[in-house]
Length: 116
Image (cartoon, rainbow, N blue to C red; front, side, top):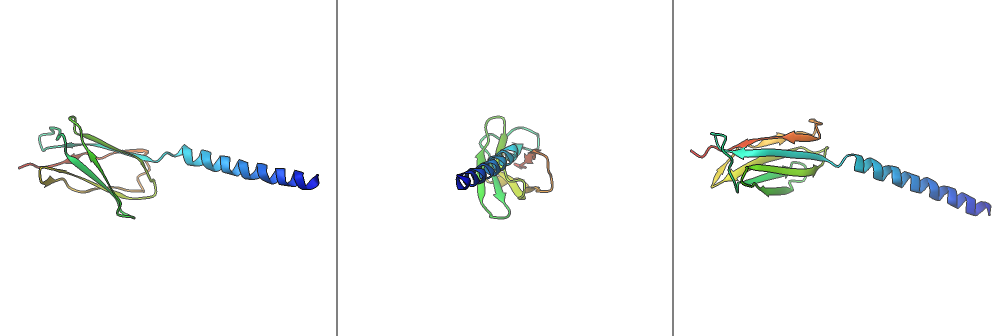
């Protein structure tokens, strides 16, 4: 009986630890990167491609902007730097960095492409 009580006690401790860990991970769903792709006259560039590179793994994500020129990359790791840039009809924006030291949960980076 004593052995059963010890095992149940250990089980409770393990389940409490798993529950705390799960809650802790879900408290921080990651960062959100949003922005807009436009030309030098601030007109949106629909169907532009936005590229997001994880600087640690070099993994690349892409997003095709809609008619309003906006993009969004949700659930990004808070412990990684990301580089973002856009391309439209063979032209490319400057590459911008979202730093891990910028602790805002939502970061806005607008990208401009000079079509001239």
